[in-house]
Every structure is written in structure tokens, then in C-alpha cells.
Amino acid sequence: MYTRKILQKLKILVPQIADQELLSRFNRVESDHKADGSVVTEADFHMQNRLLDALAEEWPEIALLGEEMTTESQQALLDNHSQNLWIVDPLDGTSNFSSGIPFFGVSIALLSEGEMKIGLIYDPVRRELFSALQNQGAWLNDQPLCAPAVKPALAHAMAIVDLKRLPAHLIQHLAQHPPYRSQRSFGSVALDWCWLATGRVQIYLHGGQKLWDYAAGQLIFQEAGGHGGLYTDYAGTRATRLNLKPHIGLAASSDTLFQHWSDWVKNHAQMRA
Image (cartoon, rainbow, N blue to C red; front, side, top):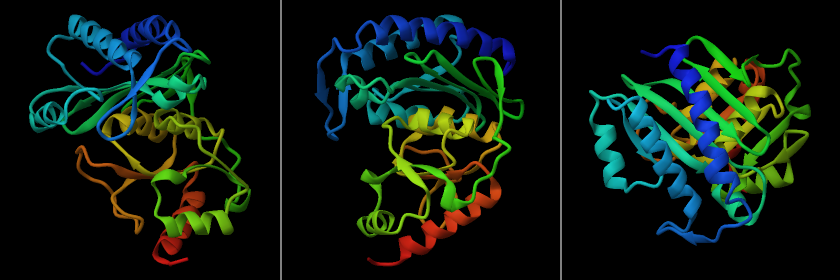
């Protein structure tokens, strides 16, 4: 069932709903805060409900795990290993969205047999649609997406680094002795992975992203030829099981660059400032 035909349907479905539910509310919506302090808006819930209804109509046999569901509901869905599952972040970059910053997107992945089979991320502001099929490649607006041929040294790399979720001593090392050319933090994990896949940035570090943050983006990045992924610690222990715990995102656009970047992070994460 995991064919280009399913992906083609998603490529029509997701942008239509996102344009209606997100762009129509951008700069016109008030925000609130969830129990964990993160921002949420009515657009998050409208988008999730529209996707739930649309996906259920097309594929009623596939359940949906969304960010705006309760933790208990999310865990129950993950525990049911026999079912296929949509992993959905209806609005990744809610803080940006609620502040009028035009950097946010919709992320949807299909989980089957413990692996991501399909990933799709839509940026409605730029009309950029990123997608991937496991072992079949990645695309940006239907054009093949692959890691750029130019492989910069670490000292010349552009980085996305989210400082908010990193240990204080690692932040201090990055601030005082950054190993890269320049650093950005845009506020959308899903689009971070996509921009890394396109080569707009070459290295990445994020200290705490959850399943719906990375589900589609990591697949797109891997299918584009990127290196690295999700880890449980800064020593480089790979995250091998899907769960609701936050994971470290550590990656680079080439194998050599990843080795240099991950070694730097590992060494300095163990050092105290």
C-alpha cells in the first residue's frame, strides 16, 4: 500500500487544507499556552481535526497520532504495534505562527512496522512541498532532492542550532568557540530537517524534539542522503525505539562533516565550561 499513489494523494490533500486553515488565520489568531508552557492556537486544532477527517475518509484503516492529543491517547496508539499510524504535527512552528513570523509548516508521516514509510512536510508561505518514500528517494515540489555535491569543512558550514534545549555548558562552548561559520535557529523542527536536506544549511543540533517533530523530516533528510539522526545522549547513542520522549537531533549533509561535527559536540558536551 505504500506507493507513490498514496503520496500523490497526500500532496493534493495537505496543501489544500493548510492553505485554508493556516494561511487564512495567519496574523489573525490569538494564542494560548499548554500545560508544558508551549504555545498553541486555534489553528493547531482546526488543522489537526481537518487532517484527521480527511485522512480517515481516504484511509479509514489507519489511525492518527497528533501533537494536540493527550499523552495517554498518543501512548495507547504507539502501544498498538499491529496498526499503521499517521504521525501528524498540524502546525510545526506555532510560536512563529502566533507571532506573525512566516516560518511554519505541516508535518505528516506514515508509520508501519516500526518504520517511517512516507514523509511529507508543507511550507504554505513558500509553497514548498517536501516529501519522501522509504528507500525510494525524496523530493521538493516533485523535483528529486539530494545532498549537494559541495561538501564544506566544518569551519565553513552554516548551522541550525537550537540553543534553548542544550546543556548550559555546551551553549557556552558554542557561544565562545563556535566551530562553524555561522548559526541560525528558525523555530520549526520539521522545516529544519528539510532545509538541511536541501543544503541550505549543512549541520544541525537540537536538544529535544518529539516524535511528531521529526517523524517526516528525518525520513526526508535520510532519503536525500544526509547523515546522522536522532540520539538519546550527546555521546552518540542512537535512538532505536519510537516513543514520546524528546530526542537529540544531530546531523550533517555529508559523512565526513557529520564525523567532525558529532566529535566536536561529543567532546564539548563532556567538558564543563
